[in-house]
Amino acid sequence: MGSKIYISGPLSSIPNSAELMPLYGAVADACRSRGHNVFLPHDIKGSHESPAEVFDRDFFALSAADILIAFVGLPSSGVGAELGIAFMLQKRIIALWHLEQAPSRFLLGLLGFAGASQIQYDTIETCASAVGQLLSAQES
Image (cartoon, rainbow, N blue to C red; front, side, top):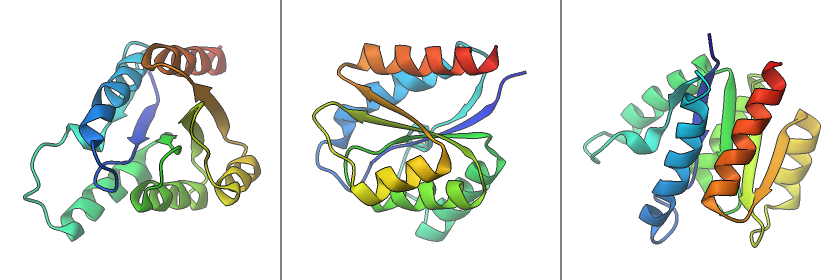
């Protein structure tokens, strides 16, 4: 049986966030194709939920997850909060960012301290492939 994976990425904090949906979806598909159960908050449609409802739903899903996959190349308070929660809950963390992006030094320090896997990518395909290979390698 596969792991429970929570995928975190910027959504409301950046312009044109819809352009990132194919990237998030490709990584989710790479996880699912290897038998993992994926929670991708971006798949939940609509903005009818209150902030408290969003927090409750996402905190529960993150707490139940084995792994957090986080897109960390663009500033996002939500992703930062999810990383902090995952770190405190001692979840396995996989951090992703585009080669042209630069996560903060504090975040890179946290990732190093947490023993997180770190993947830099240049295309959607290389990102999804690298995540899939990492998950496969760590299962064997």
